[in-house]
Length: 394
Image (cartoon, rainbow, N blue to C red; front, top):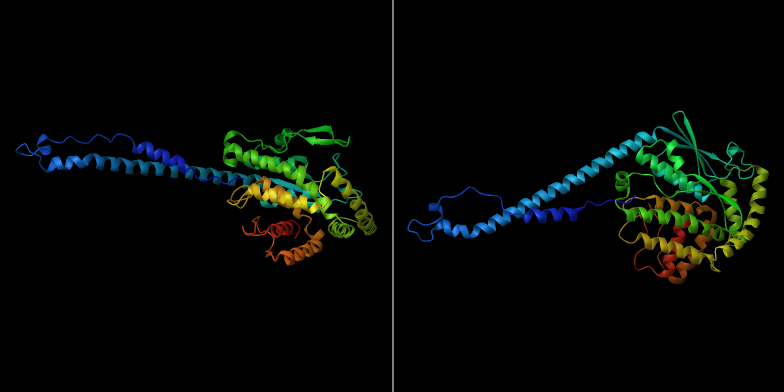
């Protein structure tokens, strides 16, 4: 769905080299008699003198190495102490918040907000909104979900848009700024989309409002911050738009998806029956328009495979998450946004798995656990694709 910062050992090695190259410290002077033989010939002391430069160089090198390791270890401990202090501060800050999430359970944008809250162990209450009447959010002029109400002392703040919610809360946890001030950094703006419809956009929604020290602790470098923002936006602008064409791909899949929506959502008996059949028919037709609008392939599964392969390639083989050893905000955006639809097409996906397995005899492992890719380097292309599909939908 934060990048782990490795200890800067190269810096330690450079310090060691510099210290090792310094001239040896002055030594107590020795008497002339100790350096020459009694008869003026080369005595034992003169022989010893030949080895002195080597011994002094070795001693200086050892001293430099020890000092380099000392400074590197001290830097590492200070970084750990900073992390511990910030973690304790985050725990204290999280206890001050009372959060209420207004959602549709099957909404991918709501799913990624829940993933963020759960990952950061932030307690919250859930209000399932009726998709037809939306009476639960009648207090709000903003009529979409998710909406998060955050009570901090006497201050009650409403946060709209999933990316704004995540960025604002992460900024709050890291910086400790008042949430009332933080939300002013993400002002809403009216805009007109490609279809000529007026929409509300939020400025800076992928940006965390941190000072230089906090950003260094959070990311370790500008590249990590840029990468996280890029893939957060990719999940919102591209990956999420692949869901509807895939889950409403056929009338059977559309009906299965709406059966899941009705079971998990807040519908009345009559509303649920109408939504299941009329909604499935409507979304089957709409998914074809979405397929054309986003220029998807005839087999929309191929676009899903390509997106998943692109994500896997971006993460690479040397880290379990894009954030390193633990998920960053890009990880928390990407995986939950698609996996929220798991039960909706579970049967169809399993059938595809069986067909693909029998065709290529590829070994199908369990779905991802903790975001780790289960396949090996030797997986065939078809088996790899279907494993990605299993991860996303099962």
